[in-house]
Amino acid sequence: MTDPIPDTPVRERRRPRAVVASVLFVALLGMGGWYAGRQKEVPVAPQTGAPRLANGAGRKLFEQVMMAVQQRFVDSVGSDQLFEKAAAGLLDELGDPYTTYLPPDRLKSLDEQITGTYAGIGLNVNERDGFQTVVEPLPGSPAYKAGVQMGDRLVAIEGMSTRKMLSEEIGRAVRGKPGSKVNITLERAGRTLELNIVRDTVHRRAVARAVLLTGSVAYVDINIFGNKTSEELATAVDSLVKAGATSLVLDLRGNPGGLLEQGVTAAELFLDPGQSIVELRSRPGALSDKYGDREPQRWPNLALSVLVDHGSASASEIVAGALQDHDRAIVIGSSSFGKGSAQTVFTLNSGAGVRLTTARWYTPSGRSISKPLPSETDDDGDRRTPPDTVRPAFKTDAGRTVLGGGGILPDVAVSDSVAPAALQALTRALGPHVSALRDAIAAEALNIKRGGKLSGPTAPVTPEMLNDVYAGLVSRTASPGRPLYDAAAEWVARSLGYEMTRVSFGVEAEFLRRAHDDVVLQRAIQLLRGSRTPREVFAHLESLNSKVVVPAAR
Image 1 (cartoon, one colour):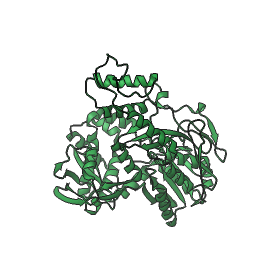
Image 2: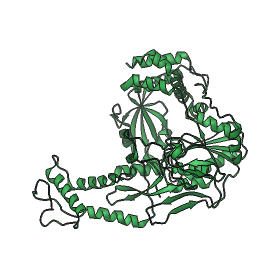
Image 3: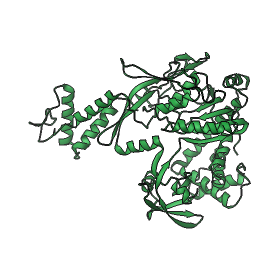
Image 4: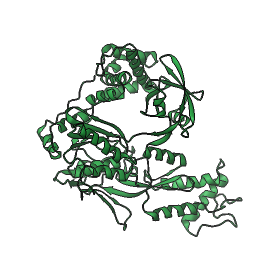
């Protein structure tokens, strides 16, 4: 399995010679006692009798540096630590941001992310007013079955206060072997609840949401390409088609990628046999790996749109690029991340791992979508996308022009422009108290719920509610000034609307409210609603006015 995730690698069973090479490298680094006795100020040779690796300037340089650190560095560093740091430094010096050393805990975390499975209670918390507050217990999880509710404050775990605990510490504390118990203390509406919850295997689905929207438009949100993503995607779309869907929005925004094979299999669901999906090219002289569709389309008459943004990377870009190059889907949103390389993770005997970039990948039209690496950037360290005038051009199956060298460019560029300047000014004024705004919004949402002020999930945010949020800011010693607050009122109103709807009516109601304000999603719905076949989506685009109207906050 190759890894197209920017920061999260996965394992691959292929290319056994590379595995042998990596194991040999570790074995060479692990060879015996190099550093005993006192040497010159900069050692030039290992102690007499110590084994030598080999003749050669590079190896001698390595020996000298290691001996200098072990003998003269101000702090004592153990031999095992030195070898581990040397291995990590070697990978870092290759200049590839995706090649790195993975300690055992990070490798374990990676496995959990890719499989979506871990042992725990399924509790999602976030800090509110200094307290860890339940955002949502995962449906079907031990916490959900035990009666944990959204908005509960998690005040203690096994009698230990969570007041100063970080999210990572909370996660470690509630996780454990399936069948073991964990005691948690909650506060709910002024009451204290103590629960003993039995840990179990928890699975976080890759398909975060699947729902039928208005106009027979289906919506599926994929948050990662884990080991069951294509299976979950197929099941979700099947159910939506049976419910009457005639078109589909596939949301890949914020999806960092995952397993190459899962990206390929997901693309296969929408392509015809023989159509290419992606090509992987490794080091010079090696044969490339080509992945193509093998099965007939599952829903050939389903009009399709794919949503992308800067957080869409790797496997997400493979899917979007293949569907765009074959004119199977219209891509909407903003330019994707631009990660055109694949990584392989090799597990070491120590339980750690090495993630290596082993190939670069290309879309069916031959595009590399990679943005410049940090070593190729300007002085401020940004990965600058080359201007369109110098980016290589390619053709889709239907003859449309698409560009390489800087992420997947959408066919329809749409972004949400809700008062970004005003919002930035407000957050700058709040400075270190910026979290107080989030806390004030959350507190007001709870007050609205307790007061029974909402007539329904789409109830508007009133000026009185916004005044109460501002009063909450002032009470938290975070007064940005009323003019700055009023200038960002549209954004504050949106955030409060989502929070009060979630607290009062649940996460699904919150999503529908967000969907109404989501200009990228609304643009996709507009294009798909008038299209009866995949090809008609592009024809419909030409007939519509390209002006995008941002819906008012609700």
